[in-house]
Length: 143
Image 1 (cartoon, rainbow, N blue to C red):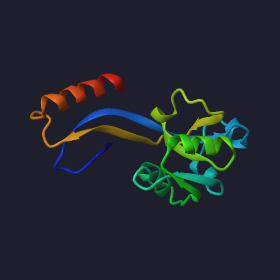
Image 2 (image 1 turned 90 degrees about the vertical axis):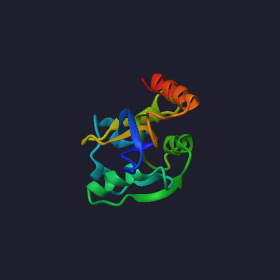
Image 3 (image 1 turned 45 degrees about the vertical axis):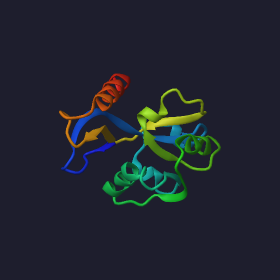
């Protein structure tokens, strides 16, 4: 889950990852080394669906901007396919964008924005053996 979470849960940090801008491969902004969030003000924006959009909305909020949302989608691959087909631009986490088959430009944001993901549980010391094995697997996979 995204961290931080509610105080009642104990958490274990897994990874902090950058949020990156997705552009059609022929987009003029794709020639830049990084993208200023203000440059996305008038771009048709493809927003991850509610619940998955918190990190992206926080980025725009920090810049006192509202994106020009054209589509809202739950599936990250559908978002990337729509960007590839010139239907808009988007922002997604770095881990989602590794080994993708899409012809898109991926650029860092000028000001670094990131999300922190981790594991949350009522008690890290008292997890079941199955949960412990799952946590160990996830930690190894992430690293």
